[in-house]
Length: 257
Image (cartoon, rainbow, N blue to C red):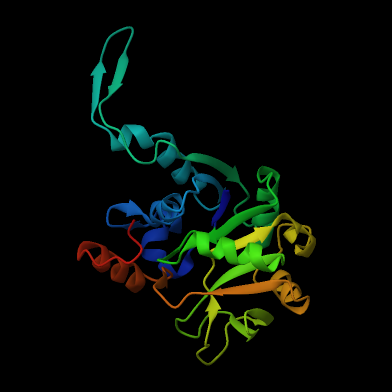
């Protein structure tokens, strides 16, 4: 199943790192957080990725273009007919990565709309390039298929500065961005979507997925919540990046696969 990951935002609240690279390339344990997200999906058998690039997208392109070079022991034969011999293998050799330029100023809904041209299947996976979880991806897919609606989002329980979900059982009835008080569940990303999501996206690059599209889905009863009470953490600030780094270094990283 295709996995669409948004990788194009500016990451202004993590300016210490994102002045020089896009937020998905900020490291945790010596690897970009994007790599950790992709490893989670690959662990569940989903290794065909569409990365929606924007701000400093060339850094992500360079990373994957030189992936084998940077992760292998190498022997070089110099001269007029140079040769390269790679001695190492890695678990990512079966990954397929589409690097899609979606524009530096494009909003999340606009990036998703552009990605649909590279998603031939009726159902696909969708997330952001700055959050980690130990959620069961395949369980969320099974849940999505069981209800037959357009969208399933993974609902999690962190602080209340994110978009609040009003829910009737497992049906999302309203979506309110950034409530003042702590919410019972918020949008944790890690979504399962049908291609008919296109019907809820405004034309143009200024479409913000978390606003009208999610609100329309909720009002139409087409947005379901797969509730996850385990680990979830976004990386919006330097403090959060350091927290994730400490988890990894201590061997207590719940998302590690």
